[in-house]
Length: 254
Ligand code: CA
Image (cartoon, rainbow, N blue to C red; front, side, top):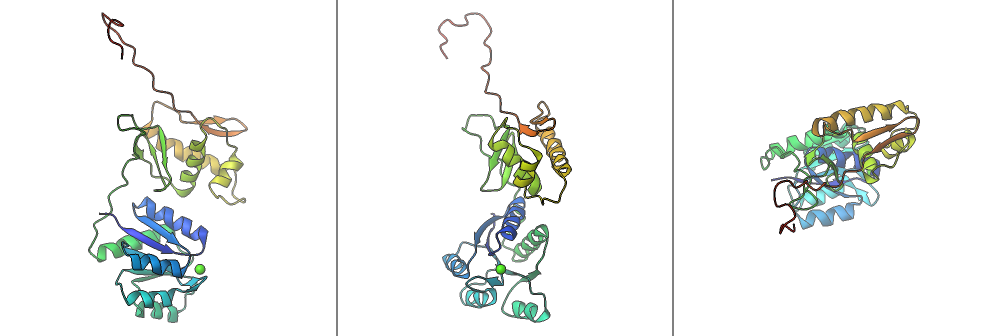
């Protein structure tokens, strides 16, 4: 059994990081930005935990939690920029399970989510992500397959453990095989700050190559174009297995 988390957060960059961190731990996440939407989703049910920002454009996370407690005991983690003790007490008094002040590490938040889910004793550790489906049931798994819904990339069917920057860079390269992307383009794709050196792209590419080499040691999937940037190779079309033996071509019209 896997858990579904509702993330209520109007800051999209925070939301994106949280969604990626949860996906890495095999947790599915629904995201809304408004208290009103959140309440509708919560009334519909089917959720296992809520991560709730306190300051929302159309209301207050505390009020939302009070309303929620009228009909549900779903675990709640508050996210807030306010760190004073009163908010902490209020948050816990109205039935929150945990309280995470911003800024926070998305990985740490994911760890807290898992710990609360375990405490609620309804869930074991989530299973590792399922492999990416091959293009057809009988086809071999693709060299690189991107599953955007799960923020997951597989190499030959095996999920890769990628950092956020590695995921975004490889996704970009895989969208257009053989297209050469400059370091600047890859930095933009990975959301790296302008201040960070282009060298940091090389570092991420090196890490990606090491991970891909474990699963595709016979290939060098990422090519370097000196002075220009990087590209991903196009996957070779399936070659027909040469037929051998006597009687080849007589009556075997496969
Ligand atoms: Ca907010």
